[in-house]
Length: 119
Picture 1 (cartoon, rainbow, N blue to C red):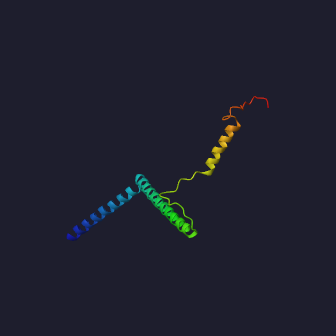
Picture 2: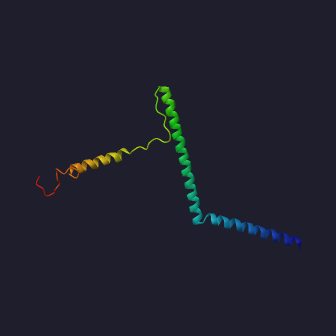
Picture 3: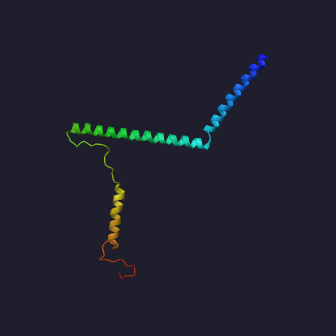
């Protein structure tokens, strides 16, 4: 009698434990949970990349200082991040737009652009 009660209780406990484990795994594999996990990983990766970039910038400043001292070049100390660089292609595009406007008479009113004008 006690043996049957023991095995019945042990089986019920294992069943409850297995059901709990399966339900927990199913919740982890639900689409909402997977999306949340992916978002957390993306945020964590972003923080790691930002920390890496800051470490690289600190190393660049340190190495630049070392090279300046070795070469005898005295540069004013920079505080914080260097100024943001402009993309040369964008600046070139702006210059081309100005030249186009000037060529077609949009900026210069002396010359009009008329397709029907005799050439």
